[in-house]
Each structure stands twice: as structure tokens, then as C-alpha cells.
Image (cartoon, rainbow, N blue to C red; front, side, top):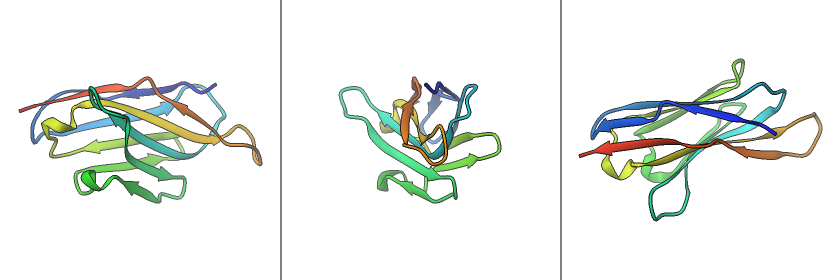
Length: 121
């Protein structure tokens, strides 16, 4: 089992910025893809962005140009820079890791516990 530790959420005014981080705690799990997702009250969880080990990124259309995902493979950490935040960005943001315990081997996925981002108008 992989425990993903997230940090960086909080309360910010519209137009402000936050930086979220996520890393696995004490593991030899090799992460192929990191992802950030979010879930607003009363809505389904949705993709924010993903990034592969090679640095290829994918963003939800509504977040392109405002959010930036990056990873440090040496530290096994992914970050999500949130800029020009809007009230409708308010949600719980979740980190997801897809990877393997051994090479070659099957892929597994794990979720973090989520970090709250609240944007006031």
C-alpha cells in the first residue's frame, strides 16, 4: 500500500495562487504517472492534470494556462501550481499515483486523502 501525502491547500482570494505538493511516504513504489483530480461539493471527481515520468503533461481544458503540473523524479514528488484562482476552483484536490512495485510488473493506483482549496470572491 502507498500512502500519498498531500500539502499546500488553503484559503485564498480570487486571483491568488496556491502550490500543492504530493509525495509517497516511505516506499519503493515506482510511479509511472502522477495525477491531480478535484471534487467540488455535489459534483463528480474530475481530472485536473497528469504527468508521466518523462514529463509529458495533460490538462483539463478549463485549467490550461492557469494550472501547472510538474514532478521531481529524484524526490518522487509532484506539484500543482494553481494561478489566477477563481471561486469555482473551490474543491478538494486529490493526488493519484499509478505505478509498479517491481519492473516488470502490474500497475497499481493509489489516491491521497485530499487537500481543501477554497477560493473566496
